[in-house]
Length: 136
Image (cartoon, rainbow, N blue to C red; front, side, top):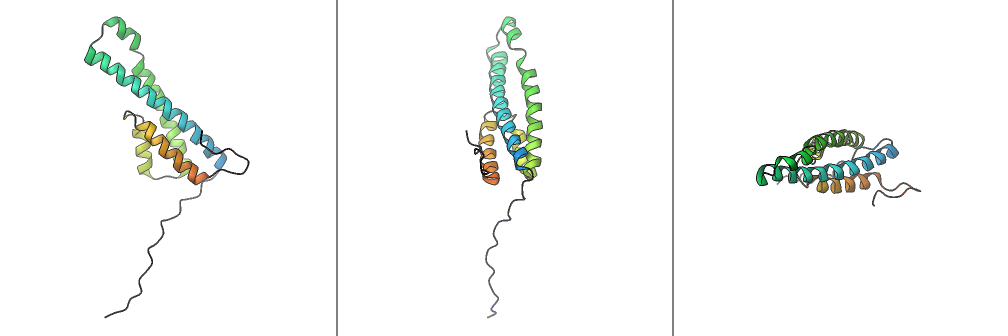
């Protein structure tokens, strides 16, 4: 019987350090706001689609709700900018980027993803002395 030493399970790799924590905190705040705005706009877009294609409202109502797809598209582009900004500052992997990007096109997903991203960012950044934590 050979006696080979058993290696202890390795601990998970420590996350890469965050440079410029103040700017990263600001990026988290911008991301949180845009995640909520995008999520709400996506829900409004879903209502618009139901009204347009399922309920088949008249042209007078369509004139009032016709702006919603363009507004969501604009908000989504701004959301993508905040996602890329936060993702690059936090040095997360491509899987996290994909989930954050999909948060703006899958109904309700932006709210769930925002909560997890915020928790991860808060844990990584911690509350610096003299600053309020990222929680609301």
